[in-house]
Image (spheres, rainbow, N blue to C red):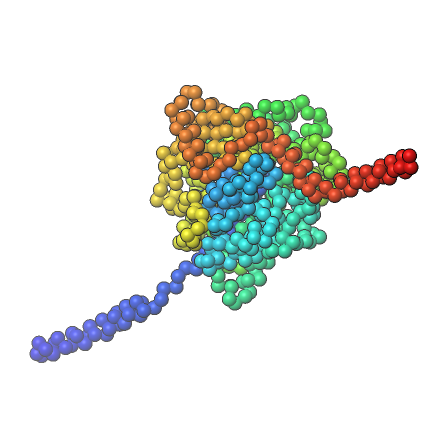
Length: 600
């Protein structure tokens, strides 16, 4: 056989496999790769929960749903928020410092000197974009249910800030069983669906309703052809565990006797548990409770029974909320959406210290509003109760103080992130801020913030690098982060924290702490490390100047300010009823004078 014949035979044998491989390569090159669908996003915001109120952080409440997400995701142990609700919500939703959003503080505590100042409009100002704005531009469906507290004019409501559907409460809180206010500052419970005032159903309980309405919104659009292919962003802002703490009896009963030993014991127990969980160093000191708080042992038996039951309701309310979060998770699982859903769960600030039951003058308002504080039915329909400053201090353990104050009891809260591509069952100890939530979600999705020339830029940072392990810290040791609400201020820089708290539980003095060694903020280093102190104070002053922080009026006291603002608001609502009797009395007096002396 000739060489050419042999070569032809070999070529014929090779032809088919070469042809097949070439054809397969062409097909692979020209066939589009099916992209992973964009994940759904669920942001869950709890109201007034401290760091250790969540079960994954050592709390007593049974929270299997949130525990499941923590086990499947990352728990942040050094996450900070603002010390008050509306500023925290504005920052979470925008990634922008609260003074730049327009929500520097809340209406209940703003002094007259700050009203109308830039950053103090108490609603999201023009040029401030929410994460819903950004995600809707990127093709997401966007929904919100629960507490808004960022304004009730149409231009202030969620429908004007990127949300397709919403059912929200525009108040600091409200009753969880009925549509009525929880404090004299409010004359009604202002609920809105989209841009219209709304009426709550007869079988309303806040945590159940917030989940039910969210499922209704998502499910309705899932059944619509042009929307079913779009991923969704769902923001659920629970009323739990804001005043009034209320829960169905079947949840509260789980905690019978748990808190009978009082707030001092709970504070010590959580402090020890924090060491076991690695939330604080083994040798970290526990700060004393604020001065002027009551001694558990000096209360009467009836008082101890009342306050122990109040804390049982508090835990029951957390469990009830978790139960309904579990219903949402189950629904997502059954509908095949859970595996592709990212969850972010956090709290807006630390535990609430106001003891509404013992507020001066509250008795008459309670009676008129149909509230009682009977121990046997505490937390049930018609009940008005709060845990007070002593339990709030215990709940904030191992941290100092509580809500409204810039000590870590007011700003160090849980943060859990779980979902696809998130590490499972890990603890992340690097600093994270409330303004980091929006940029983290956008970065996770590969979505750029949709900002125009006059829009306010995001001030927070993405946590994606610390989540995937490519970086150890989001903020370097020489970078400072400031925060301020109503004069209570802090600056975090490396291992140090500068903090100032105003009355009634603070004294207005700047103090310096080393949080790595002293997370309980027990030892003031201002005199011992004057260079560090002066450097951080200068950093804070720079932050205040660039962000438009207003100086507080001399002698400002938040509790007194709430009273003044409440009286002012009540007068604006009821002035006619106050003036009319006076005018009638004056008219009668004039008539009498004319009749008696007019003929003389």
